[in-house]
Image (cartoon, rainbow, N blue to C red; front, side, top):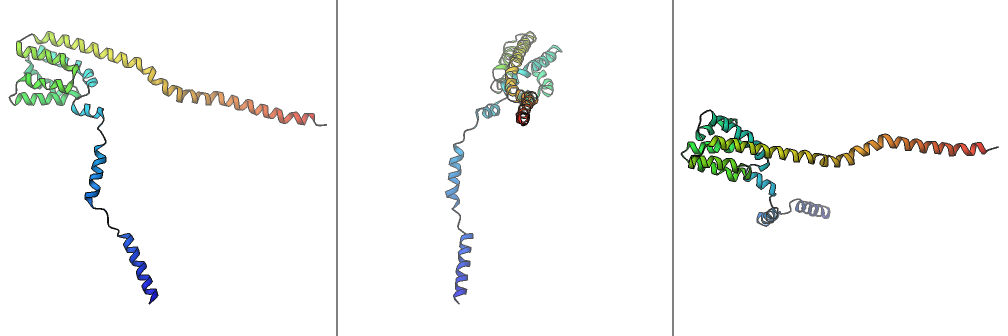
Length: 213
């Protein structure tokens, strides 16, 4: 009987340990929420989510300006050129241009629809947007303005590429010093040093043998 009681107590203790009550969800979830709030979003992610990267806009803008200049030079107006250019525009700018085309097709004025690109694309696109806005509002010639904006955009892109090219040797210095030079030393200097130590050790072993009678 005592053995049965002891076995029953042991089984009950094991079951109690295995089925311990978990803390209520209302005590756990606020703690998770409090820790989640402390993590700020990276600034880079916020910038990309709010609009296209300005560096990417600066690289793609000359191609877009050339496409607009070709369409306008062929006799199309700016509102008529946008639906033609949007499907073949650079990939980073294609979605925003498609939104502008949809807004214009829905009855929104072209200058107001294009104004939203200033916040999406940032400062690199402002000369282009100003030239188009002046044409739509005041009737200024748009083709010379597009040619001027395209030339300036290509100049800025070339200068940015030159800056990146000048930075490349500096960026390659770190892997060169930490990877290439140690490997070169292991392949060239280490065998020479090992051979020198082997020759010295062999000379030390031969010297006592030569002194023996």
